[in-house]
Image (tube, rainbow over all chains, first blue to last red; front, side):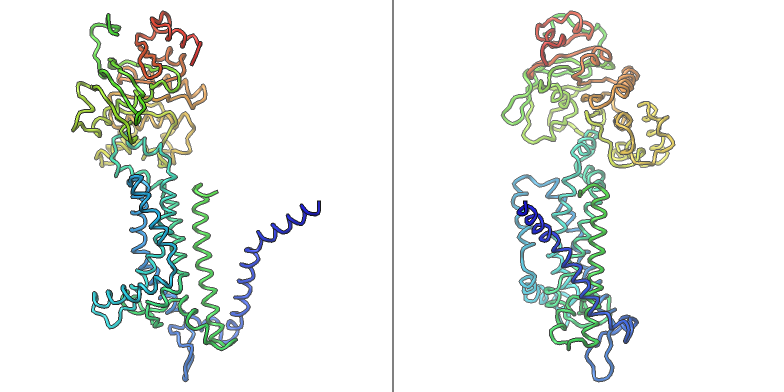
Length: 288
Length: 261
């Protein structure tokens, strides 16, 4: 009897670990970031410059970092969405079984490449290419980062979109064909609209992945904290800032606290994206 | 099989098949079926599950083409045209030969968009024209009065019987002359079934209807001609009255009297 109870308790605690950890991380982030809100106050975060180390005047504006992240993410989605959705349509609807058997493992392989390794690829292949293509002084730019992130987002978005397309009942397809619709008409006017909630959720999760990615962007975006919307300019993302500066910051300083604020903002964004994606999936019955 | 014709002398045969064999991969599903289906009549296909009646029905609008590894031998003519000839136009065929499926399958779109789907893919863009087609089709399928005030609501919210009548309206909207129905009422409650049967009664004067059913009473109620299939073969085809009163074949009699199936 006591064995059952002990086992139950053990499994319950194992299952609750993740909840506990998430709560702990959140509390820890807030605790480290909080003093900043009192002095110098939260409006310091809305400064347009990020100069955390200075002999004159430190500036802790995270806006350039937010725009950096937004620019890289937005650009990346510009490539990711069409590539992934078209790819998913092909794999789910058009590819022969043999083609599917070849394509799917490669997509999964792409997902398993460590981001640092992709970073190397970006640094050695992509950056020089973009440099010469656009005649830039440096190939380390928002565009370079976005392209690299596209490689990372594609597997997630393709796989989930494909699931969404596959889960469209065959009966819709039959009905459409029986009315004389071509395969393309059936795909774009019946299957895609029916799978759209799932595809949107897939894109959301892809965005979450891209916003949170650190290593690759740190290596190829040039890391200059400038407020810009130019794809060819070097930018610095929120994640890269934390990764690059956390090691050298003096513990408990304003700079240190500001970095935690960046962490909180990141957490909030990814949390929100995940919630929206889950909601969409549940609402349209694509996830129980 | 056709010693003395089972049809009146002036019958116009809209669908004719000659020595049709059909294969799923290596498995032969239909054997040597030759049949003449009269226009503007209701023809019912009956037989136990797996006898090939649905497969045979799906030959008439080439829906079996969508299953990989299928093969057809023999000839199928619809309105005089060999529909399996190279270069035969499947899109045009399916405009002329509508289909209603066993399980109602409206698209997750509005009622209006469901009915307008067919005309739209075939190029009708004019809103007024679409409105007219939708109204006409829904009136024809006896659904108009129930949905005329909520054409923009999602079709998924309709009851099973309404959904099936919507599917019939959707099929009618592209202007077919033949309607194939694959057990259209088998998933419906008795009351909805009666409505579908009444509807078939109303459509019979304007359309050639071929209906697969495993409900023999239904076949007896609604059809003019009945074909009995067994193990991929056409066992007997005759006027419905004859099939159900004096079947020629022992197998037919055993089936309709409920001895097997």
